[in-house]
Image (cartoon, rainbow, N blue to C red):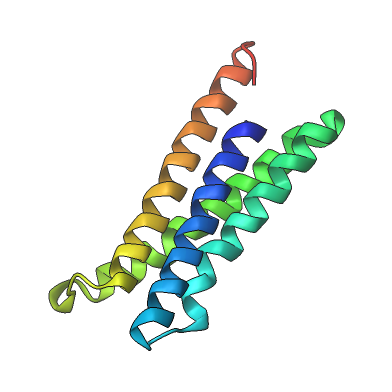
Length: 122
């Protein structure tokens, strides 16, 4: 799971950076474009710590799933609340991408936790 946390975190960092750079090129840069990157940094840090601290891995990966769940709920809720008025903009694409990456991480984590509970590997 730490490797998946690092991979998903890296994707979120890229989403945030690309969104911010795109905003800079169009003259509409906003610091909020970096929100996915913040979530990504947290996932990467938790993944790296999970690799380094075997005794804390379970707790760190549960924390990563919580971060990813919040990272799914926030943009998804925002998109749903504006469903009738959504236009395909860079911000919307960023929110959809963030929600998708976080949802994939949550699903993969749940599968991993189920396997670990059954006696498989994490």
